[in-house]
Length: 141
Image (cartoon, rainbow, N blue to C red; front, top):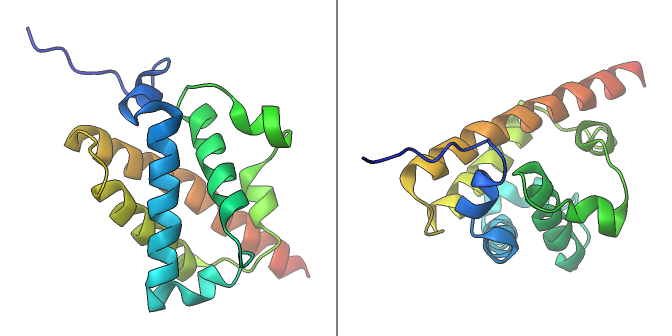
């Protein structure tokens, strides 16, 4: 009997991503792609020159978000992802560029296709919330 891995339940998604080592590879590929792609230049400028901390924060956040150890909170404290990102004017276009870089980074991992699809689908949720939080903040300003 072929059982479907219940992504989103317990640590199944974290394990499917390869644990923290897999998430570190994903974060490294994501930021490498952001660096390389001219269409991501505006998004890249929102980051510091050195991406080491951004890579670590993304991998640590994804760890807890996917059901693994809550490394972000342990290292950096509590965070509201939409509220934090609202400091920048992030619109649908920038969100789509972020998601495109992430889709490409996911594609170069050795994830099962069903998990790759699941992960990208799930990442659209916080991406949309970030756009909404940013638009609300910049509309009020």
